[in-house]
Every structure is written in C-alpha cells, then in structure tokens.
Image (cartoon, rainbow, N blue to C red):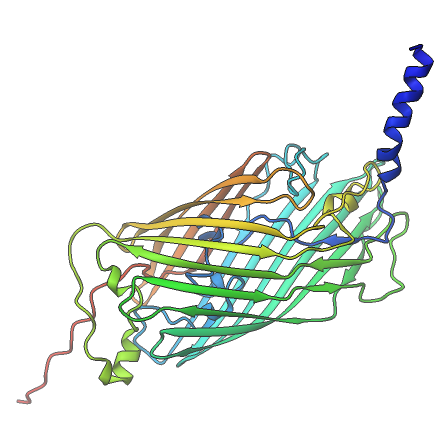
Length: 421
C-alpha cells in the first residue's frame, strides 16, 4: 500500500471518533456529582460510610435523621452542636484527576471547599442547617480564567421515636451552581443557577441492646437552570443547567468489643423521663475500647445529556466529555476506634469511586483522627483532620466542633440521699 493510501485509510478510520467529538457549546448540562467524598472530617475518615452511623450534624447530608439523634450522654432537655470543615489548599493541582477520567487534569488554579452546620435539639425534636460549597477555577489559553462552583443549603428537621430506637428526619435542600469568567486584566463575571428546592429523607433504626444500626437515605436529586434565563458570559459558553443526581443509600454500623451492648442505650434524659425503662445496662470497666465498623452502598442516578465539570473549565482546549450516562454503585467501608479514652479517636476506610465518564473505577484509602481540646469545665471542642488518597487525587481537610464521647461510658453516679440534719 502506498503512503498516500495508508494516510487515506487512517483518516477514514479516525473519521467516526472525530465526528463524535463535540465541543462544549452551552447545550449540555453539568453533572454536579463526581463520586468523591468531600465532607466533614469524621465522614471522610470513615470513607463516607455514615448513613448507618448518623451522629451529629456532620452526618445530616448523608442521613437527615442525624439532626434528631441525641448524644449518648445527654442529661438535659435540650442540646446544640456546630461543625465546621474546610479543605486545605491543594498542592498537586497540576497532577489531579477530579472526575476520574483516567487522565490528569490540564491544571487548576485552585480548588476549595468549606462546610458548616448548626443543630438545635428540643426534646425529641431536632432542627438544623447545613451549608456546603465546592469551587474550582482553571486558567484559560490567554491569561483568562474560568470558575465553576456548586452549593447546597439544607434546612433539616427530625424526630426520635420509641425511646430513641427509631430516628427519622428530612431536609429541604436547595442545590445551586455558579459559573464565572474573568478575562485577563478584568473583573470576574458570574452566572448563578438554582431557584428550586427538593426534599431528602432519612431514617435510622437502632434498637436498645443491639450492637448494630441500620440507616437509609432517599434523595430524589434536582436539576437547576439559570436564575435569569437571559444571563450569559462574554466570550464563553455556559451550561444549560446543573444536574444533581438522585441517590439512594443503605448501610449499617456495628460496635465490636467491650460494652458493644450499650451502642444504642437511650441517653440519661430518656431514662429520667421514662422510669419504666429501668436502670442503664451494666457497664464493663477495663480493657480496650470497642471498635465501630460501618458499611454503606450508594446507588447514584444517571444524568443523561450532561458533561463533566472539566468540559466547561477547559472548553477552550478540550472536547466535552459525557458524564453520568448510566447509574453508578459506590461501596464504602470505615472503621473507628477510641485510642485514648476522651482524648484521641482514629479512623480509616476505603471506598470505590466509579467513573461517571466511562473510565475504570478508582479505589480510595481514607484516614482521620480527632482530639479533645478542653476549654472549660463545661466546654470541650474537638479538632479533627481527614485525608483521602487515591491515584491522581489527594484531599486533606481540617474540622472543628464540640467534643462527644463516641463509645459507651459509665452511667453518672446517683446523687447522695439527703437525710436532713
């Protein structure tokens, strides 16, 4: 075969793939789900296996029932909690693959995430608010810069039934997105997406005397378009919408070792209000602290007609890549242990991140720890960190909140009887 014939044959063979390649032109949606566990430190350290743990406002996004899950040592009719978590600045933005496409990203200017939550419990009722944000920026080809971010604000409410054996919750979540463009030497212009909200629901079953719990999350997802349909960014295409896929999560947790039978013991306030429950079950002193194991399986819905975040951020130099064409399954497994009673908790886990873009699944290893920071006789804070490591990805975060004992403790001593003088 002559050189000319070989060149013609190669061109004909390449024609289908060239014809199938499409640039980002504004007719596509953005798949707002990437499969990464970007969450509070405890959740990240447990590799996202939290629907069957559901403790504290940390877990409200994985299971809204966490809002009304009363702390194990609570001995008053009310309680409150706060959580704050932020992603440390990335150090390898030129070598990361945030969407698990099987190749590194051309380069990001920055990636940032901050999450905060506040919770108030009044008896069996729990109320909370949770705010999350995720921001990516990437350089263009002429000194310009593109920005893409997603936000989620959730107002949650929950109720505890059957002496704290069943906890249910729901939240009204308003997901949103933002895209921006900053030409060289000019200011940043933005377009905001979102004006609707949707309902997420969760439940936790934790019978007294059992060393296990079962949890469930139902999230129908939502699609949000531009707040103002006529908005545009000069010089670049903007997405038609942001697609937040539906998610169903099922999972459980298991306490192994000493005092595992106290995993679901009602808090002191419940026993005080209901004497028929009897005294607390026997506490076994001595020995090492028990180990908590949690597992979870997520079914994440498809986002047909959507492309990756990378397709928007690098539209000047790359073709658009379809994302979320098919549903995906994500298994999670985590382990947690109180290494030093009331001072140090360590955790680790693993999860499989399926590619929303057709590449091979990617395995992750996570780890984390938290320590108590005593400020006053009535106030202890916790300082925590977590890391998530995988091929072409690294994430390290810090967190702050109130300290809570995560394993069973001896019941408080009964007050001495007053016999008078």
